[in-house]
Image (cartoon, rainbow, N blue to C red):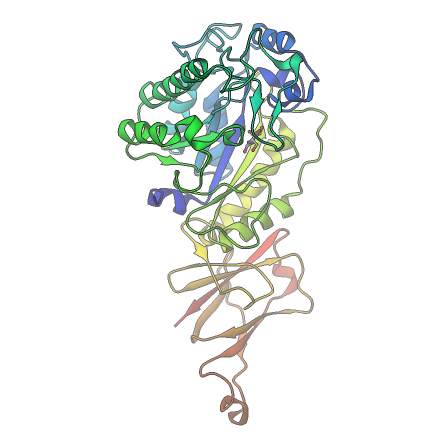
Length: 420
Ligand code: FHN
């Protein structure tokens, strides 16, 4: 399947991890697997998770300001704690300390702000009494730590197949709720598929249900087998060889998905902007991940960086939104994006000398400008000497563009080349 056209045009999304795990100051759900917190202690976080400052309208306003075109909220992470009023479990924000559904206002606020809305949902649920101890990946096959298990969970699927079926009914039932409680949803972002196979998750049936209930929704690929969803999801890296078809790199702004106050390893804006340029230059989308605090706040360390990126996008968004891969690989030392007859060179950092080169172009150049200001840039096309032209392929000429150093952008100077 191909995703809806909006998905490729959007290019830039935000993923927000929000849940009771924010109280630990560690990663979402994973401290359970590390044996850092017991099942009971983790469970009881729900009795303290009460995000009084949660106002998704503020989040949506920030997302608009920062230039995001879509958003993905963790409605339920691997820990099984649901942010909406699921009828299928009591382990949810509305039924514990928070006392309210956190998803409905989120969807409303972002939709009203004009962003496409995506819901993250974990296939594994480490809280559910029927979710077995044994998982198949990471290899070798292993059991979750005893301290992390709810009382009486089955050892494996094989040990209690009926209980696995009841888990699948529950999990599919929760996805049905997500498909029916919040109006049109633009994207479903599944996760945690590595713990079982597509057949075990009954992923095809799950996707068929989503397509029936939300026919316009885009669905990611984390369903246990390639080809079931609409697009690939490399995580925390830019794929050197882009996946076939649509794809989206998801990447944290610091090193954690959840809010971790001790993690101050925020990526510099230049790196984040460079990542966005590199990803779009390979035909992908970038989703940046941040974690909200247990009070429901997006911390200034993350927000300030995203705002600076938003300012860069205000100057240069034409080279990102609805753009795709630009020049073929190897034609320029910089990433390039493209749209129609325009190529956008992303000059990351300071070029050596005062000129930027495109090694070879096979179409005439009409115009070259700095995208941010529209200022014309002097350029020359180094036509081959007739003697060499006889040996070279026709119409291939290097392009040299003068880039005055005082016009450099601190993060990524975008040069727009209009081809004839
Ligand atoms: O385990 C999760 C992780 O916490 C986070 O949610 C990321 C987001 O892509 N997905 C999983 C790891 O692949």
